[in-house]
Length: 423
Image (cartoon, rainbow, N blue to C red):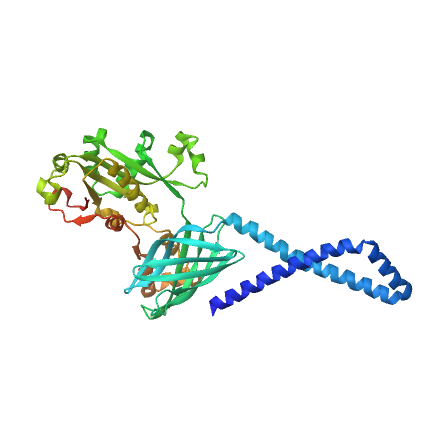
């Protein structure tokens, strides 16, 4: 019903615009005819025959002309204004999304990446989580995006609606509400969309060292272990950094390389070295038997000693870009195996923009702070929403999807790492 209503409103709006353009064209033609000789002769004949009829005709023509002009100009110029306004907003393309949900009896925040398609004032995108999928359709109404969503599964009756405020920075924030087929209840939550910056990868330069060290320190429990390898193998290490670039003009960022390095935020880093299996075993202080038997014959192996993403940008597609861009040069080095040390801390410390909004009691502001603070039982229940589980694509998911196998460590030296191997 909601879909038919939006389709009906869009059709009426298009027909109204077409009619207004036709009327405007007729008015322009009428202006030229009004000052033509034939029109002057016609009006003079009417005036000579009947003054009252002449006054009526003139009044009717002027009234119709003014009304038609006002109607057509209002519709056409409003359409042009909206076109210019929403073109500047540019709400389309890749977006990061975060939304509250309720799964398995727990409050969660789900982070994913979507692609928004825009046709006029209509926006649509597809949302996926696990084995579930939904189609979203919305219509821009002033500063709001009003729409609905339905499940793609035939046997899933889940559906609902959403209302998002469009901000000038191309972010959208609002609320969704609907029926969950899995939970068999009606629920609601915050919904946040943020445009994906262009993610570039660059070889790490000397000017990036301080930022690189900070990311390693902030995201790794085993900073001392990684730092030891960095110091021992500094000359043979290779590293790339994922950089967030807001500018649409990709080449413009490279005009001033110094400013590019200093001002551009580093979203994530990958560091690796290529050596023999014996050298890598000594570096990790593990026996050669730690590795699968089929690697014994490998003459060249690559050890990825660090994969990390700034907490603010976790689960937003940076992980996938880093792994893909890292594998290209490794492949050119003719490495026979790639071993990845993934710090287990990477998949525990996850951030979400929505956490700040929830903890500021955005959803519960209408209830009043005094009510929340005075009801101990209710406060505990609300706090369960303030500390949700965060789901999103992590490095482990990306590595497995890229053909890596996970192996269990059998050495205390690398016990706090997840080990992934690709041959």
